[in-house]
Image (cartoon, rainbow, N blue to C red; front, side, top):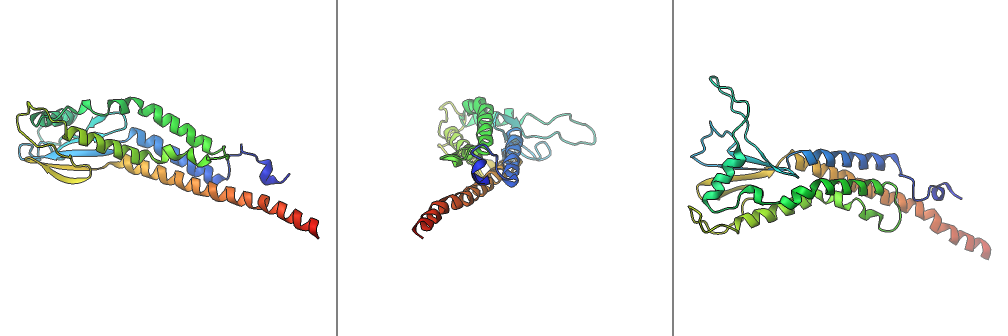
Length: 237
């Protein structure tokens, strides 16, 4: 029995594949605790000296966090920033938009379990080499795309489910997903945070590991495919 076949399907494979997979999992875990996206509103009634970054919130996998920092003054030292989640809800209330807490509650609850399951599947990828082996790391690879799709869907829902009791009438709209926009007198900004960079880096590590494993399996299969042919040619001779 050859060395290639004696390894079976339980060998984790070459060191680079293991290293890339583990690096991808580490980055994925880091992104779970990091802000993935930030959204900010700026308007004349929210002056820069009070809201230097505008009314800013951070999107995480499990919650929406306050993105406002403590202001630095010569006379007064603040221990924490203003509650911009509350401020954003107040602004949204005037145009009849649901509070931020109404969105993505199901996703927030299941995110820890999904990350754990996707991590286990990616680890199984190191050992399993049977049919459809490449499917195992796919859920982890797709995480940044999944976040963006879900985030965009909820923004659409918020912008198209405006209550009739709003103080200001605004037509249904699609809030800004990426870049700058305008809603009434507010300028809106939405961009990826460093958690998205970590998530993308994790996906790239796992994609490289999949490509290397594919090349490894093809190289291992080539001698096995050539053996029957050489045996047949020897018998004919």
